[in-house]
Image 1: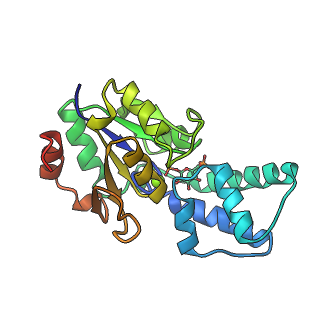
Image 2 (image 1 turned 120 degrees about the vertical axis):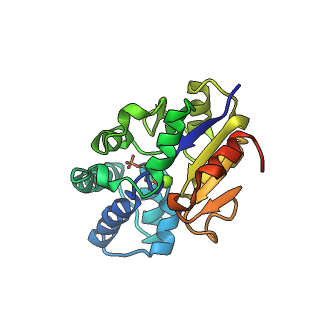
Image 3 (image 1 turned 30 degrees about the vertical axis):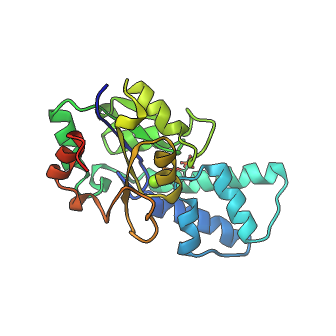
Length: 219
Ligand code: G16
Ligand code: MG
């Protein structure tokens, strides 16, 4: 029974959250309405289907099943056109420092993402082979804030949820980690992520001493 770390992808390792926002916003605009960046916070960590449902509610629009699926496919196509341009430079500052520390010290870590594009993105940024386990939107049936994605990751890392530390940028993801009885570390805005056990603006603020503290189980 050992410590392990779980990383969300969008908004934690890379800033694909901005691409999701652009693509969803284009969809809304094409349907004749708009939504704010504040509303966009509610889409973070949320699956593609649930995101579109929320957006349509905001615009007070209803679509046939066929049109719903078509819009979802269009959004993904548009999103992937941004992903296509990604490379290692997109890894957010400070992330590699932490990953390298974990690798050097043989501490297992997994990806726990709601995205069905997670594997594609990890390959683009050359991190695919670094993770001991990858759990993404193709592996889960229950979306964050359900802890399923992180519980599967813990299992794949051969450890108990209580020994897992989760890095998350979304409200739903922090709640998922808490619901799984894991230590939650919010990456982003303190006001938005106030349910997290610890909050940092970004990985540059996370020092190795803090990781070592977590490993020693000190609070
Ligand atoms: C991400 C994003 C969400 C996105 C979801 C599904 O999750 O935060 O905004 O809607 O994945 O993505 P896709 O459409 O690529 O399957 P995470 O958990 O990595 O933050
Ligand atoms: Mg995220």
